[in-house]
Length: 77
Image: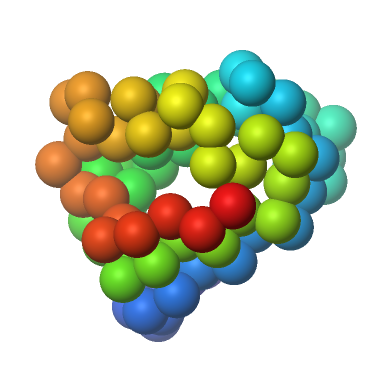
């Protein structure tokens, strides 16, 4: 996992829409749940690169602005 090795840049390549992303096990992860993973894993990369449709959507930004105390410094999408 990226958090365990403290990677400075996390690149996610996946399908996405205005609600979140789809991951390889055919599950959907909504933006708030994705943002929560960073806090749960005490992980704050310098950059999050989203290779996904709507990967830099307002929903993702709002999720990190919410209760998330760990967030990337910049999001590319």
